[in-house]
Amino acid sequence: MENNKEELKNGNEEQSNAIFEVTDHCLIIKLTSELDHHCALKIREKSDSLIAKGNIKNIIFDFKEANFMDSSGIGVIMGRYKKVIFTGGKVAVTNVNETVDRIFRISGLYKIIEKYETIKDAKKAL
Image 1 (cartoon, rainbow, N blue to C red):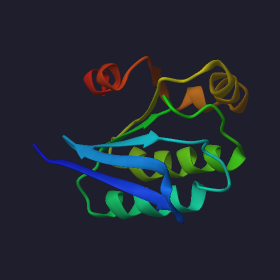
Image 2: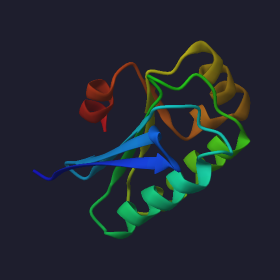
Image 3: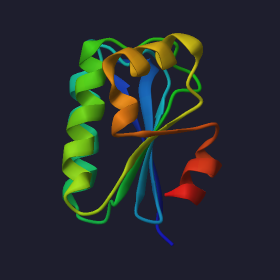
């Protein structure tokens, strides 16, 4: 079982935007701040780099510490979905609060991604 954790920093060493963990062909992206235009590019680049290594099937975005997402965040999730769907993979979100849940519902993302209470639940289902 492969288990790899890596933190993505946003210029300021004290504030990270996401923690990336690869385990059992699943990329878990634990957001540690809002998923918005300030961090979308770096999260997209890092996740694409990990996906390109070829051992990622599913992706889980964990929103436990994120309370907001803008259209750039929707783009990050959609783009990663497009990368894994062709290999039979899935994208899931976990620990979604009311505000982010509303954004997912309005945007229609729940038609292509799945929502779970916890990372453990998502890993079991995927």
